[in-house]
Length: 327
Length: 256
Image (cartoon, rainbow over all chains, first blue to last red; front, side, top):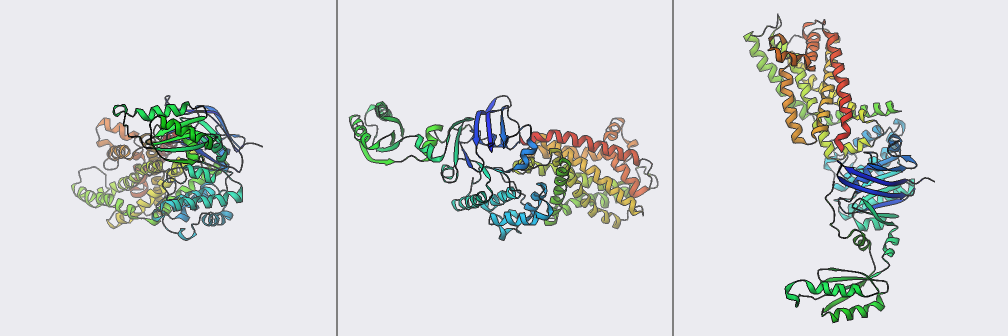
């Protein structure tokens, strides 16, 4: 069976110099919720725009259910729904009218039009505000209307570019609850971009992390978390640069010492917190404590933590802010 | 399928403009003020002067077709602003992912703008009657004149979309729009016969699609002289086809 999305060695270079995608390989199974996770400027939006046939890749190829997105763009457009990151409904007409116009653009037959619109409205919980002008909608309502417009044709794949950006937690939850129930009923493949780790963790079946135009890691949320094969021991240090003439040396020295321990997979020092990644926390703890003591660093508190997706992200992307500016 | 998708999108775009107009008609009324002043003030005063040879046609009658066209072309030339705005939002991206072809989006939006422009002219038309402009008494002629108006407005909307695809920001677009509209009006036969112009300007006027639209509508609305109509309509259709082709080709640039 064909993959819902399959990309091979996809690259995109803007204006002959900015490399937005650098050899992306990607596979998405049908009826899966797939999250593309990455910092700003990592190429998420570029990838989604190539997959939705808005422009061509510089090299490489991509298929949607076996259809080449470059060669057969027209056929691909018939099976996909797409909600861009920016607002994509007209504010000076009502929500119902937006759905009506989109249903005509997408070619929903007149006999089914009314039902499709009613269905999309109720699916997204918008029946009561259908006849209000969109400019009176809240951010969450606008986003739900945009998704409703994409659901009119029951697409096989739904592309969502940062679907919940700028929404408050309850609006985010509402969007996802509506999406999930739609997906359950129609078996739609959902491909979405986000930089909300929790969202990817909660709602996706599969995650790919993209950084600087490359997929750096992919798997199910739990695979990714287990891939760290580690517990995290967090040491809250009380290092006040008492020695080493005011430079931040002591932290670095201790960090190096801890990293040199054979069983330590990795260690990250941020401000006064030292995160140490180990496979077996219980046996590692005393040895690390000893290393810190001999380095002369007082420990205030120790906690242990199972890895979250944040940790996975930090591990593969580096820092949360390593982006090169959003395109 | 392709043609069907494309026609569907065109009609949806026309419907969109009509629905927008229904919700908010302010713009249509405020935009009628300037052309009405052209007729009521400029036209009335210049009729007294009799400085411009218009044959036995009163000056206000002479300029009415041009003023009607100016009002509709104003709507069209600034239609690109809507496109620039839709580019800043995600609407254009979304339309590009719809089944219709890209040229359908361009032609559809242009045609929709043409419809809006005709509504604009319909508001000014009765005012011109009240001001004493004597129109030809043949409803077929009047209808034909509005068709010409629609055709040329659609073309200018296409031109505007083309400019929008190059300019991409509101500020730049406004600059070009302003720079375009007045020369278009003055380098045409809207306010005076071409023969009165210096030779250089005459060449521009001959290349100006507005000249042909004015000639056609003046014949249909005022003089009843249709001797130039065929040439005028051909010129306008050529203009439309060329502009739609160019605008469709450059349209994909707008989202990149």
